[in-house]
View 1 (cartoon, rainbow, N blue to C red):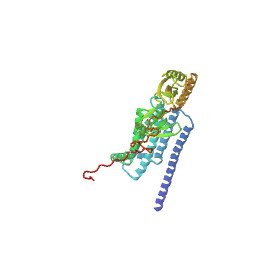
View 2: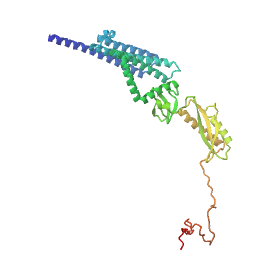
View 3: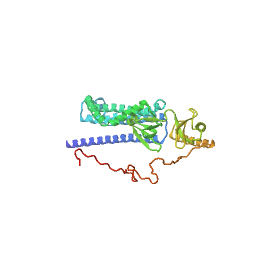
View 4: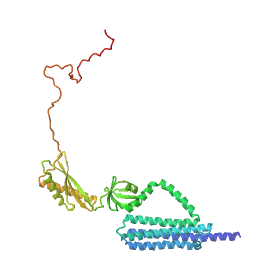
Length: 386
């Protein structure tokens, strides 16, 4: 009897070892296939339709491989009776079935992600940020539904579990209110669209080009090459300047002219010079405004517009404007004055002076500046007569 028992246990162990080995081979093959496909995608520039087909094939492969685990472990009956009682054998079946469900949810979310990307590529109204939000929202929905199914495999009282999960969500929400605020701000940015990827924006002290917009933060590449990560709640709570939105930007250069020069003529010369710059638009036309009476001359503001604003185009336009104005002023004998000061002197007329041989009066101040007046006697009190 003992021999039969040991033989049965040994056979069971051998059988389970074979199943475990097959399971490891299937899972390793799926992971390897996924890694190979990802590496192949990175090394080649493929079209969106081909990527969609590859994602669909990979999803079917993963789903088939995970489904084969059910056959290997002989758990096909557990699929139809997952909610009938709870015992140890069923718990093993539920674990394997949970792995299959979560793997299928992952494959489905990956397929839908590429489908959304392919559909959004043909729609100009959907930005890359909105596509990312839709993709992440779809992923969360699929994973939440799969998680509910998995929870349903292990318990029948889902309502009480959801109540506990809701209470836990409130506690976590209070502890991570800043992160949740950033996530909600990400949805606000998605619907309001204050900027898009590639726009030149200014948020507080940070300025640069938007490179990525996620649910929680916005990434900006500064003109020094630095990557600045700004939380979305900071983006929505601070004034934001979008220099790209209107498609054009005004450039202003201040230049001083000598007080002897005619400001109207100098303004016409500067406007004509700026109008000849290739990077400056003809409409709106360049404008000249008087800024102030400076210490060395009259300051004029020369204004022009550029299209497709960027930091590089702005500085190139400013440099070209300055060069054109300097050449035009030199050709028309209009002086750009250096900083200068005008000094003047005057004789001292104030103060008190003595004539020759005159003695200072008792009330006149002495050389030290103190008065030479003699002190007066203090009045005596009544009844103190000598």
